Length: 75
Image (cartoon, rainbow, N blue to C red; front, side, top):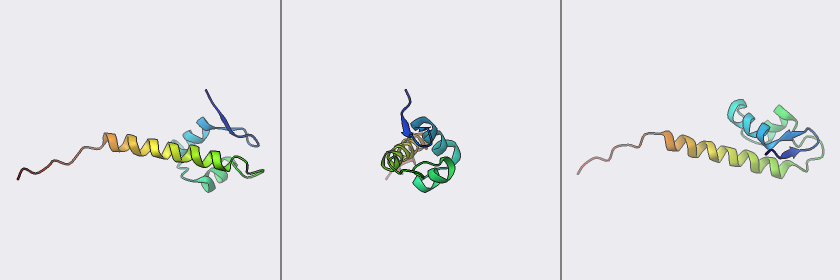
């Protein structure tokens, strides 16, 4: 299910997440430049920030889970 984040630009949460993953969007300013999010009425700014933050957190957890853990030296 998709949720419209920015009604003015018809930008969904899925589109915003895809731009974080593939387009390098890391904050609201970059989302505004790439998609026009929060560029008109601004009511979506809080939601857009939350979606971007959640996707960045998800990426960080995924990345950390795939990193090999350093070996602990035997004492």
